[in-house]
Image (cartoon, rainbow, N blue to C red; front, side, top):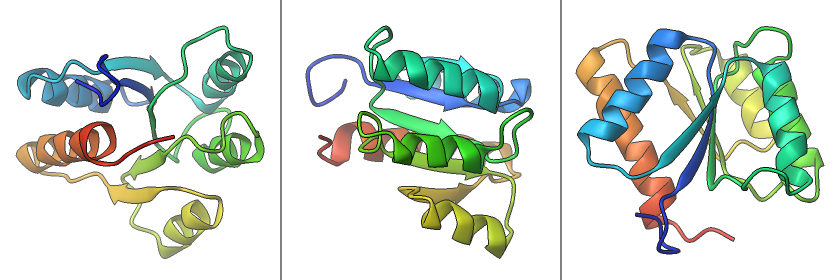
Length: 143
């Protein structure tokens, strides 16, 4: 349960069907009540973000963003979020397979709240997902 007495809302921007299913499974197995809205690529993320900024879709409490996305890169999605006065306070966790120092530096330079490398090990992957969700929806105080 979110601090505000309702399920937390997570916008998951993830093109990998397998990774998206693992994120969902990790949350379900932990008993999480978080609502996950998934978009499959950066262009769809921009459309959803525009709808969020316009008030047409409920504002998420957290964005979990892959950076290696088709059509519009995750870095460009992150720039879009942080450039918008209505969205810039959204916490964005970059969750990527990339270990590149260039990608990490770019994500933080564009305003990422954190950068987490996706573990290859299934159990570790699921533990990390649960840790991200717990920290950002139950531990920190968000605006």
